[in-house]
Length: 137
Image 1: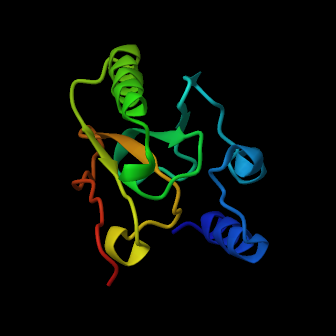
Image 2: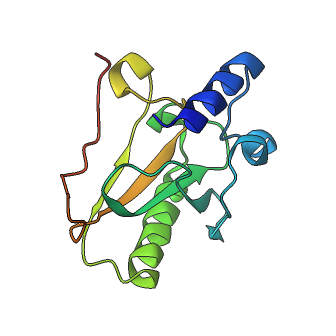
Image 3: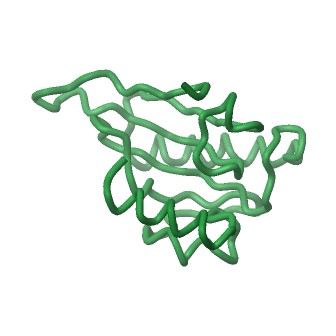
């Protein structure tokens, strides 16, 4: 983690608030909202993973921690939003990932459903594959 990220995470813990709930998002997240739907907002990751060319977050507008709490139509909108990003940014390939539930299993730092849209920076001179951690430890 970056020092500024660590400081923000400590503030979030001290405040006892979910940083991805819409009422709190602007307090902690300083990136612009690129696109918004009925269920999701799309925004750049404030602290993108190392060796990423593009790292976006699709954040569910309503607080949810489990996949079973997401309306089925929100899943359709998520794929439409990410397909838009793929086309808009002319992405040749990448990955998407969603952590959910108990953070001991998911290794998530924010327990609010959000999807990560990740494009590796293959042209970086010191490129290493982007890793997405699942499970604490």
